[in-house]
Image (cartoon, rainbow, N blue to C red; front, side, top):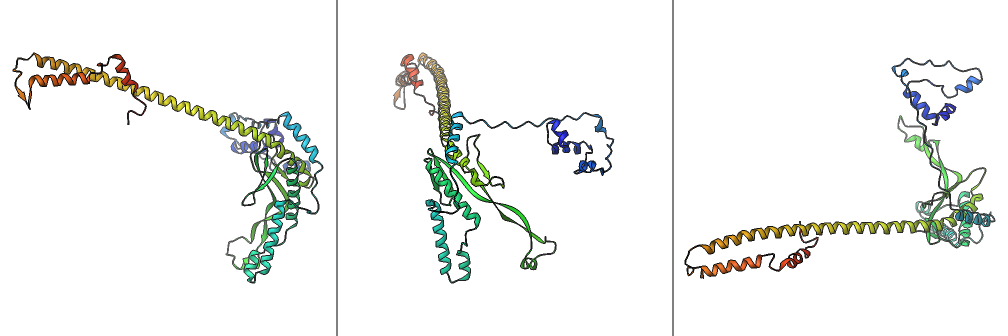
Length: 368
């Protein structure tokens, strides 16, 4: 399956799925080993199916794009740092530890002292941190060498409120973590656990146990092409990767600065584009409001024309102008209507006055 799948550009598991979907038998696991030993089981015959007559199209799996290569200057810088850091060695014994690690050790001793002074057995057990394991001491020695190597490269090691570690390189924060890997394992139940076991429960319990292998991980996002994780192996212990780790830290600083500047430039461009979009939106709204006001003026002018015609008709009527209504004569009423027509006429100030009124309209003039 693996050889045939390689010809089609897919995985053996992917080819097996296609065979199962199309009801095509294929050799089970261990078939070819038994075949080589002359003990191959009988081959499963191909079943007759309506699907056997139609073609099966297999599309090769597209390969992931390779990570972009590091710039030449960064690669040369890493090579120089690696050569310089190749002399760094993790000591077998912790002597003059880094200030952060010294604070850890002092805090551990203080907690042990408080536990020894505690008379309550329960509280004594709660407060006692226990002795450092071999893995703990190894982590202290490794971090001590790493901290000092980074600070020799003008970096700064910082610790957060929850003991999270970071390095400040070229003003950029690079968070990292060193931990011991664990694996899941099954263990038999203790006598006490057996006592409280319910029928049907498993007679084992799954738990995480330390493996003694260390894993170092840079948790901050790094530019593509920079390694961010190193794991202990039998062939290469983590201590041997220390020059690589230091080189990545120092090289990451300028790249992160460049990325931050590119992000800031992109953000400024986005804000400018957003500002231009907003200003264009306000300009269109203001222009629409002015056109709306222009039409309102036109409607007022048309209504005034009708009122003017109506006033002319009233003047042409044969009536006694001395008749008074509400203390005014008819002549006074006609003068009153004439005065209102002049005041309401949008063209009374000429063309300049009409468009001055329109220019006073803003995008917020109409509250809708």
